[in-house]
Image 1 (tube, rainbow over the protein chains, first blue to last red):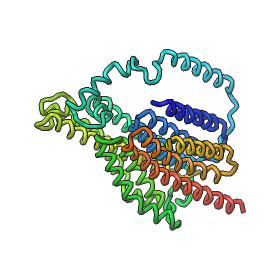
Image 2: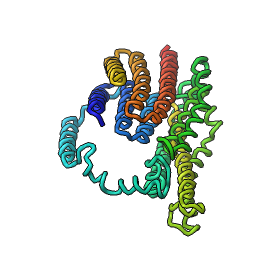
Image 3: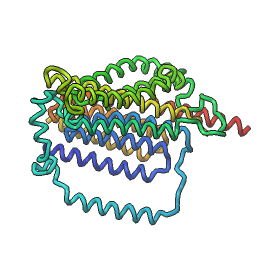
Image 4: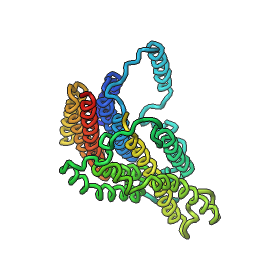
Length: 332
Length: 94
C-alpha cells in the first residue's frame, strides 16, 4: 500500500465523518436517506482500496442500492421531517461519549493496519492461503474460505438472513387492522409505478435482462472474481425492484407471487443443509464437499456452486419480500 | 502519474458534490448531488482498479452503475407518490 493510497483512504474517511455528522444533524428524513447512500458509497470505496473486493461488492449492492430503495419505501409511509425529541438528550450524549471513549481505548490494543504480526495474519489465514490451491483450487480465496473452509459459518449466516426475513415479515407482512385503505397510486411503486414516464420505462426495461445476466455472472463466477450468492441475490432483488418501480408493484407481485418468494427464502437454507447431509451420506463430514465427486477438488467445486446457489435464492426471496411488505403497506 | 492526477480530480469533484448534498437547499440539489456522487464513484472505482493493479475488479464499477440507476428511479417514484398524496390532501381540504 503506497502513501498515496493511505492519503486516499484518509480523505474518504474524512468525507464519511462529515456525512455521518450531517445525517445526525439533519431533520429532513429524505436528506438523511440520501446521505446514508453516500456514506455507503464511500465505505465501499474504502473496502475496495483495502483489497476487499467481495465486501465492497456487497456494500455497493446492499448499502447503496437496496437499502436506499427500502428507506425510500419506508419514507413514503411517514412524515417528511423527524419529530424533535427533547427527552433525555443529556443522558444519551453521556452514554455515547462514554462508549466512544471505551471504543477508542480499545483500539489502542488493536494491531496497526497491515501489521505482519497481527493475529489475523498469523492464525489460520496463512494456512487457508497455502492450502486453497491444493484442496479447493479456486482463484478467489475469499470464496474458498466462505463456502468451504468456513462453510458452517456461512450456513449460519444463511439462516440469519432467513430468520431476519421472517422477523420483518411478521412485523410488516400484514396490513394494520382498522386503517383506511389508500388508493394504490399513493403507495410506493403501487399499481402503476413509473409506467407513464416513457424514458425511464424504456431504458429500465432494456436494462433488466442485463442486470439479471450480470447477477448470474456474479453468482456463478464467484470462484474466480469478487462475488457469490449474497451479492448475486441482492442484484437479482434489485432487478425485480426495478421492474416493480417501472411497472407497478402489483405487476411485480404477479410475476413473483408472495408464496413463491417465501418458498425461495426457505429453500435456500434447505439446499445448503441438504448439501451437508448429502456429504454425510456419501461418507464425509457435514459440509465436506470432497466426497461429492471422484476427484476431491471437483467435489469442492460442485459443493461451492450448490451452496452459493442456495444462499442466492434465500437472499433474493427475503429481500423482495421485504420490499413488497414496505410497498404494499398503505400510507396513513 | 496520470492516475494520481485523475484520482485527485475525481476526489475534488466528489467533495464538491458532497458539499452540495449537505447544503441543499432544495431536495433536487440533493438528488442531483447523490446521483453525481454515484457517477464519480463508478469512475473512481474504475481508475482505482487500474491504479492498484486489479483491473478484474472493474465488476464493482459495473455493479455501481446498474444499482445507481435503480436508486435514482426509486427517488423519482418517491416524489411521484409524495406529489400524489399532497394533491389528494389538497382536495380533501377544499
